[in-house]
Image (tube, rainbow, N blue to C red; front, side, top):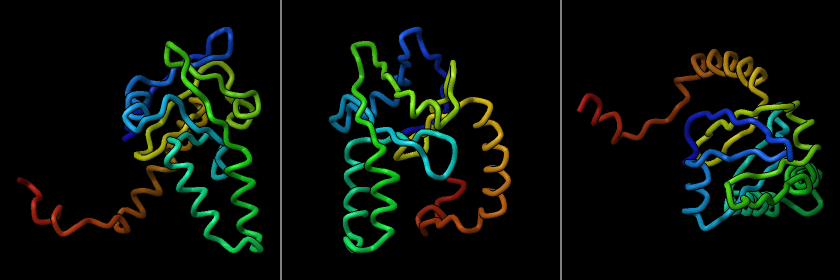
Length: 155
């Protein structure tokens, strides 16, 4: 899983080191890179494994080929996706288009989201996080807990 938050700087050649734990997870999935695309939910870059983008593609393909939603999702996700391979030092080069979308200039945050991660401009993420915490608190009852977890609390 992709957990935690890491801040890394962009080097003079426009490369950034992907956190070692994120690279390790992707490597365990048999992939030496990451798929990135601009988020359509916020000003961040979505990042995932090859398997995850294939599942997204299959989900999009399950829509009717004549349905507008299919084109919207394919255009917003698949046509904007970039397959970025790690160099020998675990770095990737994000395109200018992706960096502009997220308003990233010198450094970025790699934000674990479980099965995926996001890449943010640090100040923008801090603002988002404050709002996300408030909304998570308001919506905490909607999290589904398996009976197993409820029976083992406090053990």
